[in-house]
Image (cartoon, rainbow, N blue to C red; front, side, top):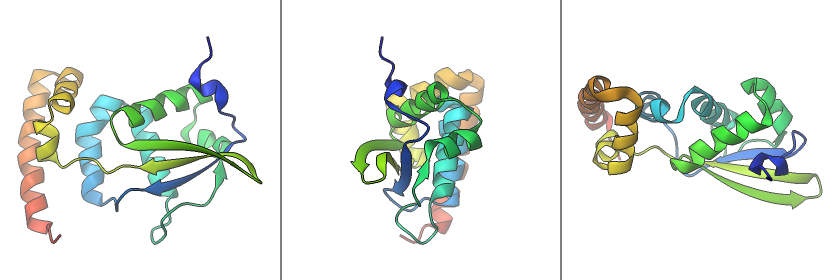
Length: 157
């Protein structure tokens, strides 16, 4: 059986782009609503890729996956599983390419949905309920109200 990660080498390059500006508010949404669903490894991958972004640029510098694996302290199968989780929940898109430097990937970070939309989404809310249980899910719904109050206070878009 050919595993998806078998097409990925630690020598392959990668760079990171983002669909939209990611804020500290987005990080809180990721931490409290997405992390229970995707797990700590995938959450760490997202934050690490986000950290690779130049604060004023549209993309990161090109690096090797070996550097990324070292930072995450994981192997290729763990990395690939985390990447699939992020792709599955809509937080990451992956593209492959080839140039004069060799094989590379572009990882495009997606923006998490706002808490109100998160809880209105049947799939996301069901996944969170399954991950944290009924009691904690109720706490998350109260957290949604706090998020909405915070977002409405600072929203200037």
